[in-house]
Amino acid sequence: MPASPVPQIPPLADTRSLLKQVIDTVRWEILSGNYPPGMRLKEVELSARLGVSRPLLREAFQRLHFAGLVTVRDRQGARVMQLTPQELSDVLDFQTTMFAFISRLATINGESGDKQRLLDQATQLERRALLDGYGSIREFTAARYRVQHLLHVCTGSYYRVNKRTRFVSEIMHPHLLLPYLSVEQRQASAQRWLSLARLVVQGDADATEACATQINTVIKAAVFAGLGLAIPEGRPTTRQPG
Image 1 (tube, rainbow, N blue to C red):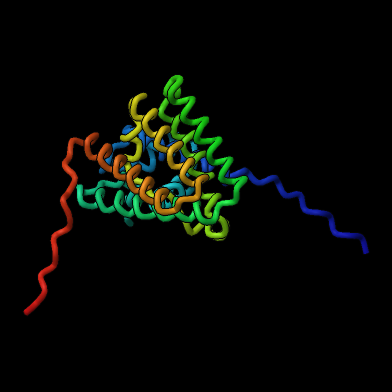
Image 2: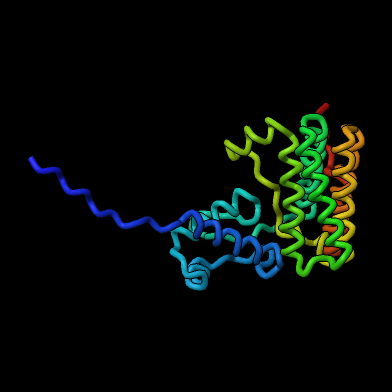
């Protein structure tokens, strides 16, 4: 009996890469302020502009929803996330807590080689920032994320387990880039990252955690200053019965 012919299956399009490009494009438009908070992301127009299908765009919206940049509701489509001052304060406070925790873990768990790579990358970030402030905020952000990635690597098994399960996701909001708009802000950020990296290498977990907390305190202040808003003093307390 002759063997059955092998079916000719056309190669699949690299939809994962395309999806990543769509997510990156829309995310950057949001972070750059081109799609302001509260703006409706019109599915038909955006899919035509990007040259992608509407189902793929919807998947991108879901990923951006998970990242905290858009809201997605049935029959209402997607809108850029709009946070009240208190909600924004809560997001930034939680970000501070997580960043301090990760920095402490990196100090305790990091292997010497990983810590040195973190320090080298932070040194490179600082030198380049002081030299020309980076050509664009996007270029600086990419370089800053490389340092941040190495900080996560230093956390050891915590990072590897959660990287595999994709449980940990960066906390995002539409005003994420406000602390880095000027050359001076980018230079100050790079210097803070270098200070943190040095503390990680030195192995002082308490000092590293305090430094990380201070870094995000500065970031929070810059976000609210950039929006022209006062930082909420705190949540109202709930009255107890009786």
